[in-house]
Length: 166
Image (cartoon, rainbow, N blue to C red):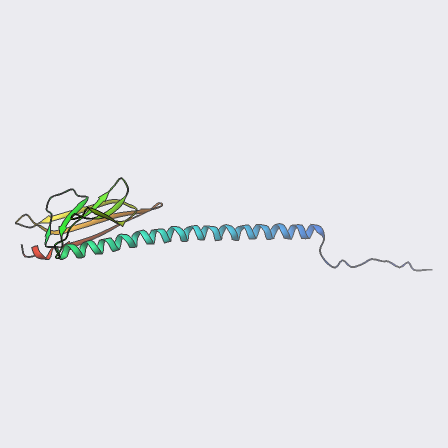
């Protein structure tokens, strides 16, 4: 009897169905990685913008409190959204918050120049505590900064050294 030779080959490699399934799984994994990477980039941008806004507000607060501490005179009256003072060098300046454009301004009253100190400010107040002679003894400054959906409130107080003993 003669034996029939079988040409049964062992299958080395992948079938088309296996390749398509592995490609689909790779595509799903790559999409998930891309979505996660995109979300982290969006989060990074939002955090960077918030950092810049808060840092600008902090620097503005530092500038205002420094000038208030050393001021020769601080206006006792005025809207709660602004504070006028005279620096030791005799410069008459005003810090003013404008809700319409959400900015905090430094205005030099001698030449009416305006400088933007801080953007993205949604609220600002200058609360004066008066001494017995009616002059401001201290000023509490509060700034609310909004960037995207995040809102932060920063506060600082300054005692006018000239009126400290009153």
